[in-house]
Length: 505
Image 1 (tube, rainbow, N blue to C red):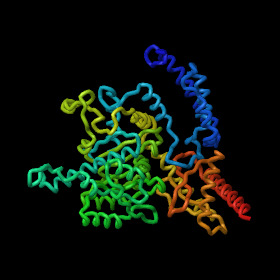
Image 2 (image 1 turned 180 degrees about the horizontal axis):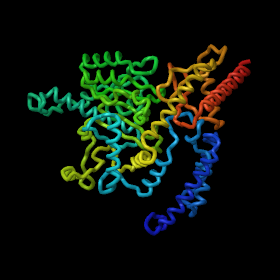
Image 3 (image 1 turned 60 degrees about the horizontal axis):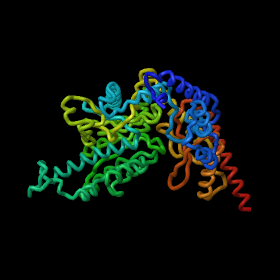
Image 4 (image 1 turned 30 degrees about the horizontal axis):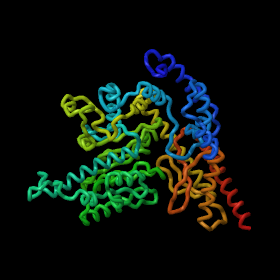
């Protein structure tokens, strides 16, 4: 079995095996005619469950044949121009090359003695991203598994800063009360119960999830109303902050979103920054989706105000066309990352700090961590930032074309004009006055489209009603593709309504 270990004696076997796999995937991608086959759960489960994992095939080609049957043939392919559903992008080849390299070398980015050059590459990319954001010379950050982890860590830092400030206020600044007791003597549960996080009512669910994981009650997340364009209302935020302080509560953080999941909307960052500065509140910008604008030469101004943030989430695997996962958390003040720092004698003892040994685990919620930064590094070294920005600009332009199509089509109601590359709309059948029936027609159309495999679209709710969603992240998607998918949706919805009418009669 040692022949399967990758080392100096098996390098040629490694080359042959990986080449076989790459050729199989390349052939599949080259011949994929639609984003999905329409396979059902009931069809696929027996195939997977029928494989005896205790009886190996002992042959790479045979394993790839089997993989074709249980995965490759029926995978959902994001590279197809009619995959229009979630925030999944087609990936650029230099990043895939980086993925192959990092998997084979298998560096772990927790400590210098496991990664060396990998540590320095990640740190350089963190600096590069912070410079693009404009966070200033004291900025720092770390790569993460995705936006949810980045948001969790940002809110952890915000919680620690807010509670430290609250204890200082109550103890006169030296950490002790007038009676000499520890400043932390205020019941920790009571202190946490006073914390409040402000986020728009269409912010990512990870804000509420993070609050729960951080020990905060459900009421700690205060939803701020949005305007017609699904952007946080700064007037409403100002009132909420005033009410918070008036009630003796502690404003822990404001989460501004630069690219909401459902609408791609960008909150008014300059106005929010001004309110945060006035109230002394941590400003976090969730730019998991909108971070692609950091590389844009024409639309970068849509992120104006992000430079005032205390922390920023970026997901390169959304709008930088990177394979999952490739994400990061950036902070304005490197010192705040100390709240995630723990030292273990076997891994990163305190003496290493004084010896100036760079251990990334000092900044991360994770210990063992992949060298995901290499994918972005290879992309920048081959394509350059302008190349990435051009691709993202193209999908934003395509969304604008799609909006014009929808706005001019009486069959559809479109919610907002896109800021990024998301379109939310629904089929509105003529003569149907029951909103619930319209809901059912749209739900049916989405399911029928997925079952056909001709296209994949997403869905959401707006005002309690069911809507459909295009998330455009593929520059290969054309206006003709959008028009064709709209016709398919209308056809399926009309089929449902016709069958419903037949049943009713």
